[in-house]
Length: 250
Image (cartoon, rainbow, N blue to C red; front, side, top):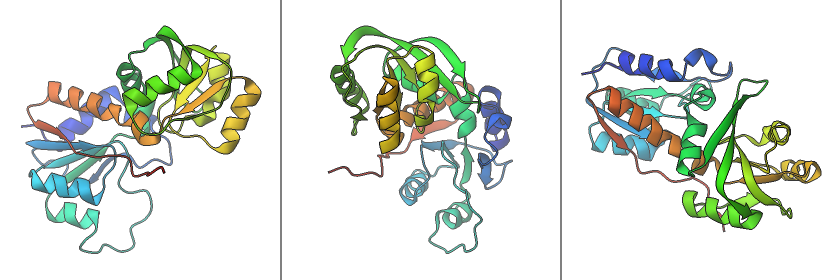
């Protein structure tokens, strides 16, 4: 049986933790790093529902993309996620910005999910990666948006440009800051998760389409990639927790 440290070291081999942003709190955060692992639950975020699911299947470890602890913990009530995990001996590992920045990480998973051919990988000034992809067919912008919605689900927001789409810059999650880089690599559109009013205005001025398909929706495929990697490496049962976006759109 693998130990927590074995799994942590393996994640480090394809998504090095020393590449994570300074503000990030990724990696090992709860439990015994030398504990032996039989069953692992995977989720994008740790929530009380995910912990309840892990408890119900007797999981030893939860692996998430987003970290559990970002701010100092001043109070630890008995119904909190941290307390419940520690009490039940459930360990936690996250792979956040290091998995975002990995060449076979979050963006790779999204490109594969959308069946897009990756032609180039561009590293930005802050260490992130933008993937340049070519679609297997040309779309109108509304047609491309409908395709994204069909595959990923959720709600898709975009700026209304008269544009055909064949080349796509991909940065899952919070990639709205990379409009300039996407334009420079010749992309017709930047596909990401988030985007503000001003991001859409900037995109219009640059003449590039901005398609925001949801933070959860664009990053969740990465957990399937993580499961595949861990399952192929270790003799441990891997289960994906049932989880959906916390955002309701009416």
